[in-house]
Length: 305
Image (cartoon, rainbow, N blue to C red; front, side, top):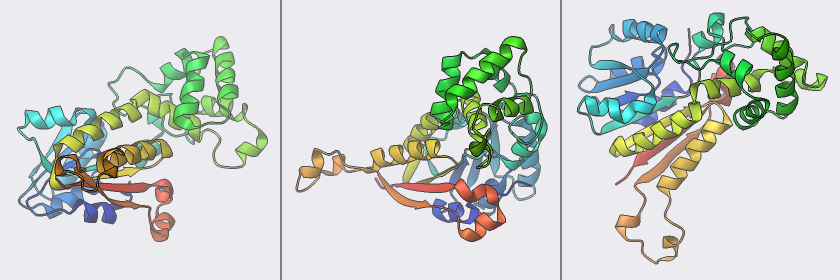
């Protein structure tokens, strides 16, 4: 079963009260939500997900605890719209756990894993039209280079993209292990001995298929509008691209304009509405128990006015 990363820390920093209204933007298999629900006896939990399998599993898990929750089958980019439809304009806490859940990685048919053979898919929302298959077989050489560089920070982006284009001219690339073989044949031997040579390419394609960075940026800005004074937003990231984006957004909303910093006293209306509370990594013990947590980072911000 999927182990929630930084679980204790995120629950602590959400500062949950028994009447809190909390939003879990990434329900997954309910690791965080089930623990949140236990603490909000008089509050309410809204949880977002678009994976039907995860929703069914989590619903069965949550209903054993309490009934003061609603699972919203939607992408968290619709955070504000979905909550306003339910007459909710402000909440006490919002959580994002941006990791792909272990079952999605482990179940080969979803195509997220570079260890198992499966059709190229990688859609979080299985009803979406763009899949990994379309990206690999239809994107131009330049588009492939762009996503491998921008979303995978892959130093061999050009040679991998070139090999993909050459191979697909003869036949379409249909499975994950076909793609893995192409990547392996495009990089130096030394690179293969480090971490898995295809991991950055798979990350890049997954981010492209699900528009992960654009969706996250949009949603986080909505979250900042919807959090109450005293409320907190917790974000767990797993790679440097998301973490950098989160860090920059948090810095922007918690900083005073450079020109105003020169003033002896900053008028209240120009003071930041937010304060950064925490920036932490998993303990050595957690990394030992759950290897997937090694790249995780938790950032926390609080609305102060």
